[in-house]
Length: 275
Image (cartoon, rainbow, N blue to C red; front, side, top):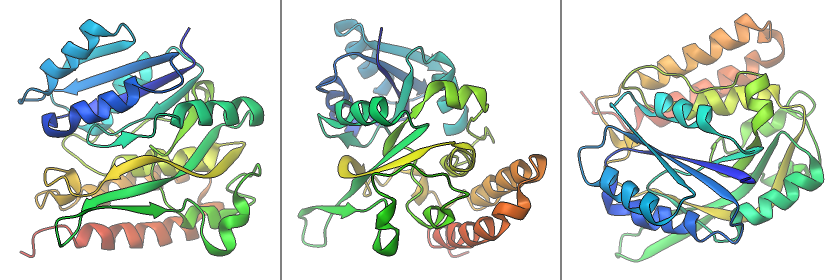
């Protein structure tokens, strides 16, 4: 049985896909289930996925019509059969020891969520490729490393990097709490709700001060550069607000919600067309 399931949502990313798949395939932890969701790609991404699946039985490929990131991720999460799950974006890549290291921490700590540091990777002004180290916890929040905590006990963790792919999750935690991605058709930023809700509901989180994940920041086709998706962030924060209201959590987390909403809106504003 696989020890970790890796969910990879894929849409029109043939330029970067092999580098991503190779990095997962070559993990030192070999007991993996690699679930690739082809979300209606119109380039060669689907054929590339099938090629890997034919050569490596650990790959499971689902081809579906295009319904957006949230639906693709939820489709993959529903197929997970291993006790832990990780997420890799199809234009990123990971260190070969990532899942071995995180698995060892998870087994030792029995946390619901493990998060590690990561790199942001992009082409600089002079054409050189840059890897910029990003801390999960910085400054006075660095004390959160290597200790169990809940977000209610340490709400300052909410002011840190919010990415879903820099760690692993306990599968039974996600399923018990029914944590999924928002499925607004055609929307982007649907990792925001998953990140927020999993942080709130985790009974034990654990941060690791090592970087294993390489996040590509210069893919011109990335959804963060799509000028048409003006209100996607708004819809995502409506989704988070509904979660807080439904679960009577506004009193505990409304200040954090407002802070994250403001900064996420400003992030989005910088990426939409001026008109």
